[in-house]
Image (tube, rainbow, N blue to C red; front, top):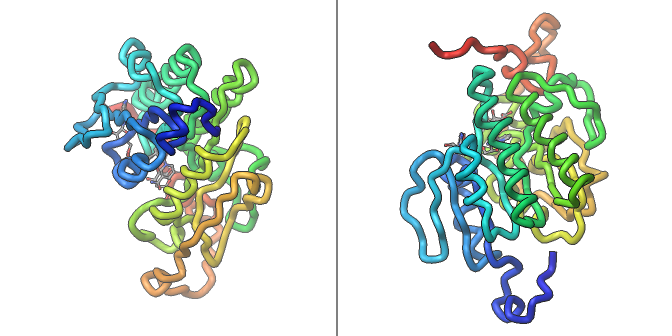
Length: 280
Ligand code: NAI
Ligand code: 15L
């Protein structure tokens, strides 16, 4: 996505305006500062308060389910990093508004506003019902492990449709577990450091012609359940590893409890988390 406008080249930033949704969340807070290097203006959005707004930022408090506001949110935007939405298993009604209706609103508005590319935060839970004894590549069959995972499959399909129909590019990031550090032994396998997450977003934004792509977001961990060979064109090379945290979760005797689905499948505890009853 190089910029051929001479006025823009003079500024040495590849984008005029980037939109970051979910900017008040865990990963949004990590990414927010980095975006200043890639765009003159960073539009930050969330349903939650956005805190202090920097000089290069525009803040929008928006519910993604609000169609009118989402269309206004996309005005004048070159590319989007879409992290907003419910990030764990939840009652269907809640997922429906934030992750299904909200995502449709985003793509519909992006297409009408001429947005060129969306970086979509999918999840390992789109394929979480693959066993831990397998390695999944980006063409592995979808096997969502939760209604949350189903919404991520919806996002991957919706973005595929918008590329095939309108040429709106998307990179779907099947993020593993991106936190300060792994919280359990499963996350030693699925860990994505914040630094590697930011690098993955950078590669996804700046690679020319991505079409519709899927890539796994994991660091260079000692054990892996995923294979990014077919996404090599993105140039993502993770620098970090969960090895530095292995002492926190010492390996025990092999787990031979074949009745425990949270140990058998890549999605871990998500495989038993749903469906959840609506909140009354
Ligand atoms: P998070 O839950 O901390 O952040 C999500 C943000 O979305 C929150 O700030 C929340 O207020 C906002 N949001 C929720 N509903 C909204 C709505 N209706 N309208 C507008 N904003 C809304 O999650 P985190 O960890 O920052 O993850 C970011 C994205 O990456 C999420 O889409 C999540 O599903 C995905 N992801 C994250 C992983 C991780 O390990 N952190 C792993 C796999 C996927
Ligand atoms: C996700 O998709 C969630 O957003 C995050 O909170 C973690 O639970 C992560 O997956 C995981 O699998 O560890």
